[in-house]
Length: 125
Image (cartoon, rainbow, N blue to C red; front, side, top):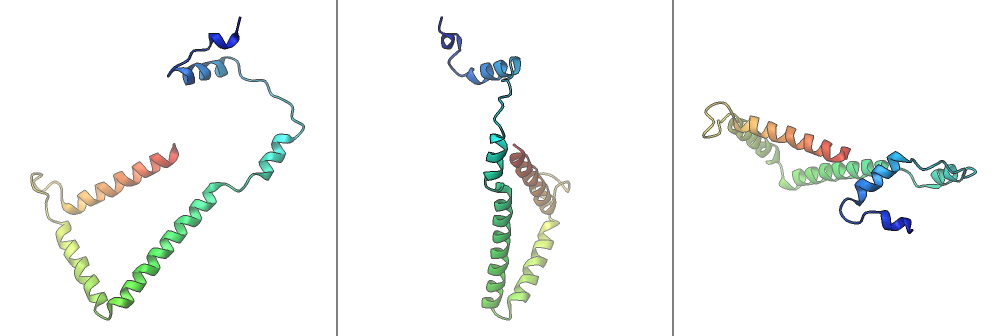
């Protein structure tokens, strides 16, 4: 009898394989330190490169903002203050249809918190 013939084929292969591994875990194979040597020879974790990428993006954004400020001339700080005060005034406006319960600022805060939660959940998988 062919042992491969008893294996299911189709979308439930993963469930079947998981069940088989849990029922009969594979025995440990003595490898005379091979696993340890391979683990030492592997490149560094990708987390370090993700941190480097994040630092580069933040640095590039800071340089870009600074360059925009220099190129905009002496009126740039005044424009930034005017934009910030306009945003502050808009943030307290209620969203139509919600009464005074939900303002533009609170909607932005909820969106930011939900986005951060979604990002953290996506990274944990």
